[in-house]
Image (cartoon, rainbow, N blue to C red; front, side):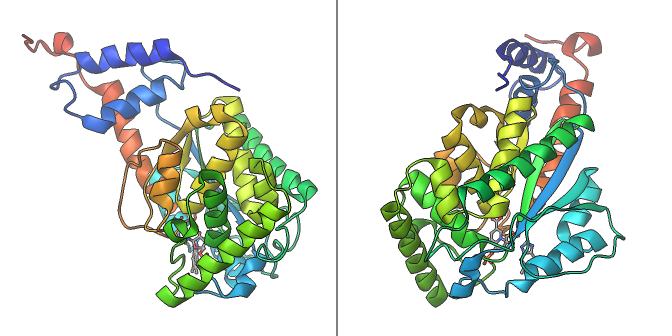
Amino acid sequence: MSVINQALATAARLHQGQLTKPQGSLGKLEELAIWFAARSNSAVPARLLPAVVVFAADHGVAAESVSAFPAEVTGQMVANFVAGGAAINVLAREAGASLSVADVGVASSYTVTESGNAVLFRVPVRAGTANLRIEPAMSEQECNQAWTIGLDRVQEALAGGKSLLIGGEMGIGNTTAAAALICALTHIEPEKIVGLGTGITAQSREHKVQVVKDALARARAAGAVSAKDWLVQVGGLEIAALAGFYTGAAEAGIPVLLDGFITTAAALVAVKNKPEVADWLLASHCSDEKGHGHALAALQLEPILQLGLRLGEASGAALTLPLIQSALALHRDMATFSSAGIATK
Ligand SMILES: O=C(O)c1ccc[n+]([C@@H]2O[C@H](COP(=O)([O-])O)[C@@H](O)[C@H]2O)c1
Ligand SMILES: Cc1cc2nc[nH]c2cc1C
């Protein structure tokens, strides 16, 4: 596991104090520049080279009517990513991030026409998970296979010289799996965590709460204890791949920018499994999904934005990128009081 460099953080803080602005006047942007310096090889880090990887998979629990959309939408959206028509295609392009999509378990068949800015890796572990309300979502071996796909994506990003990793997800039903994981790992009750996902009614949400309660009771009875046990029992293939992705990033010493509710559930799994992963995580935003704030608090993460987003696909993280790049550009390119000949007291 890579360790962060406190000496670089100190040097970066000192540098911030010399820039031509009242100390602290750039607020959180100053802290962001210092955060990245501690995770780079310089007190004044270079512009970030970001890579977005969207992991897609289906969920057997979709059969429980927990989503506002049918399961086929997962595959249809993968085709949309590859065609270039999804929100993340637009936002990754705007932010200058590379974009790839990994199908780690889409159940429906879909046809792709490569015309957009996304590269597709078709590496399904199985055709979606089993229904986590009534049986384990996946086997331990399948979970490890999905996790390894996440690790592989980090290796590719490393080879491409990427310096910031962003994981996204697409999977109808995955807010149910993410909610169950967050409940299991934080001991917060489902009523506080289960939300509306793609836009279910309040009445459907009551049913979704019961589905999560049933899944938790079943998994507990089956002997789930560790974060990986819970991932096998109530997780998802894209969530397992994301947890591997975050773990691999921390091992390689590459900062990670989290997206919404589901990616935060995956980060919670990765951190409970290896606490040092937490040092490499930054929260882009707090989504509108009910339990996201609780999940971020459990990770002691403060989100940068709160815009009422609830899309997923890494969209919130991609939206935060220009702000982060600006924080680093200010840190790098502003004059100092002495270079500009400006008086200090
Ligand atoms: O990232 C979030 O905070 C978020 C919140 C609500 C929904 N989503 C997206 O919506 C899908 C899951 O919603 P659902 O209702 O099918 O569980 C999945 O594809 C996610 O990317 C994402
Ligand atoms: C259309 C659509 C796009 C999405 N992107 C991420 N989750 C999604 C869910 C739906 C339903």
